[in-house]
Image 1 (cartoon, one colour):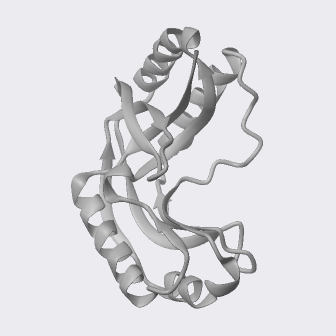
Image 2 (cartoon, one colour; image 1 turned 180 degrees about the horizontal axis):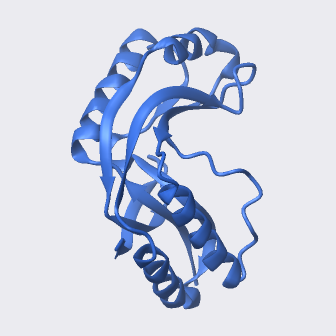
Image 3 (cartoon, helix red, strand yellow; image 1 turned 180 degrees about the vertical axis):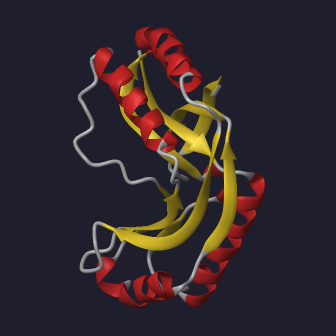
Length: 188
């Protein structure tokens, strides 16, 4: 049996509220576009997406992630700035930036990636770019005004304290994905 798994950091309820207001603004300004907007309760920073994962690996994954989390002290980051993946010519994802200057976020992500590789997952090929996805664009040709507006907005949601890492199961449905917490792991 398999489950669709990812490892993430949640953001504070205050930050989620500010981001939800920003998403509402974008929705009001661009009602005629085919865009899937992220719901505030699902906002997170993905540290590692594993995808379909054998259930038999989950206990060892939890054990390793617990050790990885305990190896990093609690830290803070700022949610500020905006961007688009893969780029402005073919926009598919709108995101908000994450600024963390102590190096703790990258250290945590690298440690988790190493644990996942030790369990048989392929190493992450893309450079880690911490961000919060707020929208998935379905029609890139029509979204250039939205992208321009999003990139020109001076967004800031304040400081978020990180105290734990969460392992989630992503359940797919016709209404979109639903995230279920499998375990939480405290930082030191």
